[in-house]
Length: 178
Image (cartoon, rainbow, N blue to C red; front, side, top):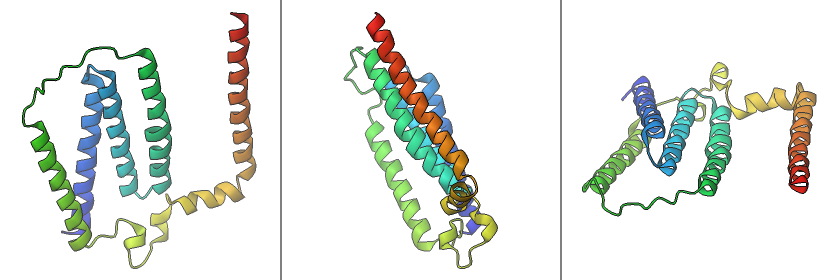
């Protein structure tokens, strides 16, 4: 399997997973299922970023959105309360079997690509690193951020800290008034 074929297969699988997660977000009746669908979409988009060699954006996608924002969503869902009684009857009797077969197929595909695939879609796996292909790496983004733009970066961090402290003070002020 050629390099382009592997990239195409990974792109199609990640794109289909992102679409499936998005459809789940919209169509699920239970908010927890919607949140899990959103989580799947966020991880799939992170895979698409990795395929495009934007590793920093992929890391931010997973850490910020899939981590922090999804935790916030789940806390809000739990605070609102999902007190609906869940049915214990499994509507799809062979669901676990099909999920197991699909997971096994994905694992076998990943193992096959890792063992037999000759691909260079990750710069570290290439014999010669193309400097143009490393634009989205963490080092390529961090170097100008912490040298040329360090003042703007620190000012943004200061403004965000002031905003968070102001929100806490305003919340305390409203609580004392009530």
